[in-house]
Length: 149
Image 1 (tube, rainbow, N blue to C red):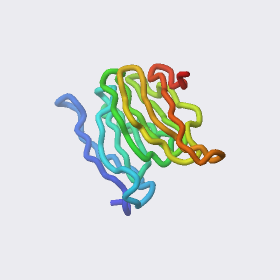
Image 2: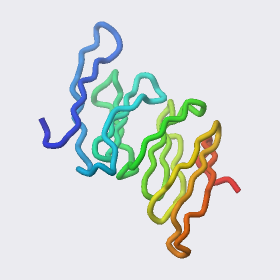
Image 3: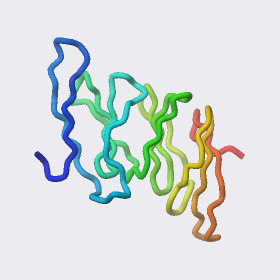
């Protein structure tokens, strides 16, 4: 066992497939960052988050995994209408879809994103602006990750 790592026993679909142990390194030992398991938009993948480090695991091929570039992940949100898994960081949002990375937003905050609501096609939030010391609102298009006017 790795010290502080998240270990997940994965049982791949199909009777002939052998279970495997996925060991996901711990990012930060801090209650402010998530640790847990999430469904992925691709039914053959699993999302594991260990102390803010997020991994997408291919349940059919243990050697295939992706470590999400957003570090640390501060929040994970699933959007069923848009079939995305959203990784919210300090400054931007990273989206994972059924075919892998869907998009990564531009900088939305200087330090801290607040997701206020998610509706089909859009995400509404606020991000802190260093120069004004305010949290102006923003809206993202969940198809492209672009900021809407």
